[in-house]
Length: 596
Image 1 (cartoon, rainbow, N blue to C red):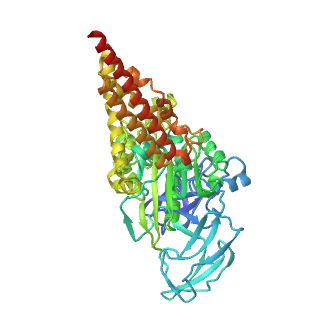
Image 2 (cartoon, rainbow, N blue to C red; image 1 turned 180 degrees about the vertical axis):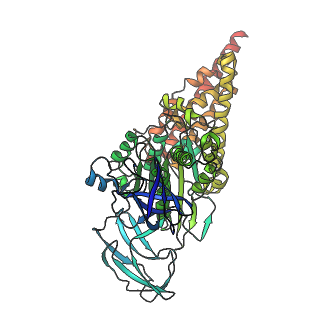
Image 3 (cartoon, helix red, strand yellow; image 1 turned 135 degrees about the vertical axis):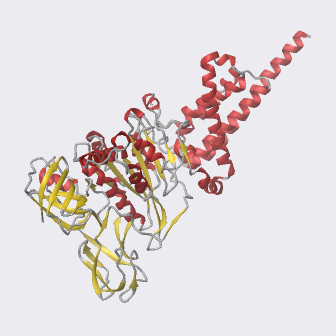
């Protein structure tokens, strides 16, 4: 037990703390505020407190729990809403109202509900089991099995294993090894500061399908990959995170609202239980874990929230699931580190951030990946971090530190968002380094034409941007017709392909098959337009073909009608351009005859 010596905002210095360890969780003051030791100097401990320290006085006691900051993991985890240190907000609200009372805690996983536990085939009493091995499962939701694993660091002979209905803290088996007996329950705890062990990590080879055309076609992210979505205020960071949460083909979503405004988190908390999961038809919340740490909550808890989220994600990864963790935003996390660092009187780095900021960012994003777990399951953790650079300045330290470690960069553009172009990802400044890794999957799944078409539309969009600069100087009429076709194709791609409406049932999500059909059709139109220009058809004639309207409406086609519609529209393109070439060809011949 120690004594409070000094208080500086969320930072508390306590004396007489001999025997405590770094990152031990402590209870601070008479109210029992939750804190964590982040620095030790002989008998003096520096503690970051995860609650409001108003009213705390020097001389009050500090009691160590001798445990690191950990999360509870068990059936019942999905569908819950936690704060940054995994306190269940709904339970706390029932105890203290709209504002969390000081020192108030509750079990992260309910202890009263009973779950039916079914042992795995091949695991029986007397079997030798090792850490991380799956010994049974619980059907947590209608579509998801929650596997029960041997805690890391524990192995031996299993006994007392049986099928039955248990609470999460009831004994389901005993493991005896190295002369010790350990009681096994469905509940386990993991430290949030350490990455969980696994057998091996695989190269990124499968894309995370999001249904967002600008991402899947132009700037894909691999399962187990990393992405950053930086942008100024109002550029659509939260919009893109919501779309990924609903439509990405991850099995589990962990959404971390780190230092975001209360109204934004309120939207998430109210909408997710109401949204229908397109995979299962059930509420989306049933495969989601929400961590809400709003801007008015204690700043130190922001620093813990991202670690809480990634530890939960690793837990489901070890079961063999694909998990997407969406952190909104890592800039607020970095600001929390900056405040704590300043109160520790550490030497500041660039813009006041601590010198270890790049290291912390790298350590966090490196916990992503597709791995073979200790149980032999293949699972993945995909990390998408929103970044909120002040004034949209991407040269600031958090953006630069993030871009050094992530492999996908979605540059959000406020001007696109203001013009109602969503997702507001700027196609000229974004990039993905997963394209080469994913090319084999694209070729195997859709054929080599898919990758060729992707490269072609990128060339068109880049050429359009170059021509726009020339148009500003000399006007579009000064350009040859072939280059004006490029401008029209760029416009078609921007408005009819890259822009999506989240309110349109058919347009909100686009399968990869439909995306490939849309691009193939647009490029088919471009080829016929180029051929027509070479045959002497003026641009006005090309722009007058009615099939352009059909192409623009392809986004509204139902997934079941894609193949049939693609063949029909391509046929119309061929017939209408053939008629156009014939019409202008006959006109030229008549003119020639008249001259003669």
